[in-house]
Image 1 (cartoon, rainbow, N blue to C red):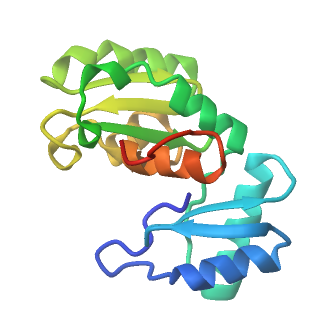
Image 2: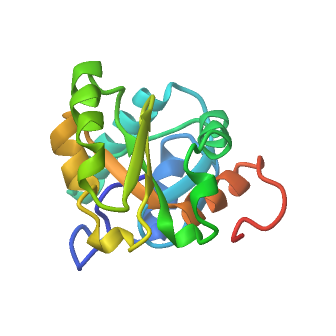
Length: 181
């Protein structure tokens, strides 16, 4: 997952270029989803090593400094299965997951959790390298957005809506049924 590409005209990156770049790194079965830097592929290496290789190649080949966060297919399926907020709302537009580049410092997590009641109806839970979000008024108006979480947790982050998370999980083959549900 690339952070901040094709948003508001900044960091323009065609998904065909991303697919080609991933292929040249030796990854196989490369498929992208929507125009914001989501890709599923096969290959080897830890998520941290894979993310660094992709970010380095994007910088070298395309001149873009783009944060990259990678997850294994297995981990992505665990994210879907373990969403503690999934039962709060039938509308998937209210649910999001913020993927963190590394596990945050436990003290920073505790400080963030202490603020939990200050965001109206918006709720969040930090589990491992993910922050699960429930934003019933919409992600565009929440105070618990990507920048806020990066600042509070001290790690790079990228947020995906629940529909995208389900679709990516379906693309890795682990979710049965309609990923748009």
